[in-house]
Image 1: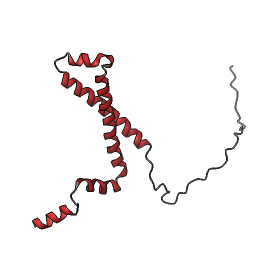
Image 2 (image 1 turned 120 degrees about the horizontal axis):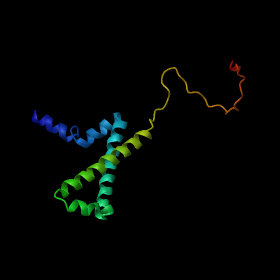
Image 3 (image 1 turned 90 degrees about the horizontal axis):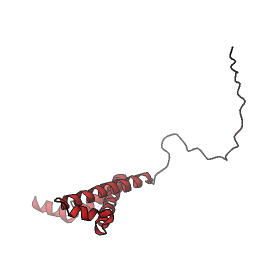
Image 4 (image 1 turned 60 degrees about the vertical axis):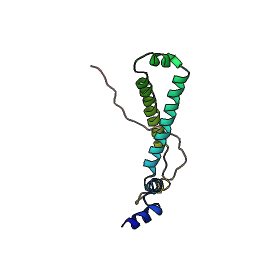
Length: 131
């Protein structure tokens, strides 16, 4: 039984990267959201670190004079990370395009026609008279 388990480990069946690749082939949107969220979180932590490094708006001096400097810095980094991560992931989802965009079922795509000039339509309206 142990030999069968080691054979499974050698062929990469339980390797996390292999599992991620196999999972990503089926769930491209979910994989893209996770990767872009992580990328956005990295950007957010980087921006928060720049904010603290260059002491913009005197945030670093305010934080480091307090009793909870580490907690405040961590909360600032977390807030930036989750905000930037969400924005980058949302932008990636809005730009996501399936490779198989073919119509399914009986509906067919409508062919684009030339734009036509708007024409005025005759409308019958009754006037209101006050008596």
